Length: 155
Image (cartoon, rainbow, N blue to C red):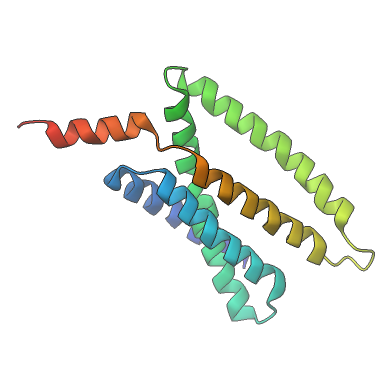
């Protein structure tokens, strides 16, 4: 399952940013990726058939790891003219800090029988909240301005 997550994630990390660049949209791909990832994580959390777990893992990897570069690029575009190194560093730092908090939360919510049902349900709920927050963000004007400039360039 871990192998499926990693391989699909590598593929997603190439395919989703290319598709996003081609269409000139980040928000659409981020929201779509989050929606599919929520379903995939739910499948990983509650299914027990191995082929389904591998499939859910592949979908989760493709859309979660594939959305990573999009989110970082979106962050640098929204933060422009702040240097990319600064915005990327802040995104990475906040991601690491919240990741540690999330691990502690997951461990604290774990049932005495080591069941992860409650922590994974909390994670899915937090992903739903994040997806709704992503719906509310605006598209990157830097991206749309660049896409518009390409369309109006004369050879």
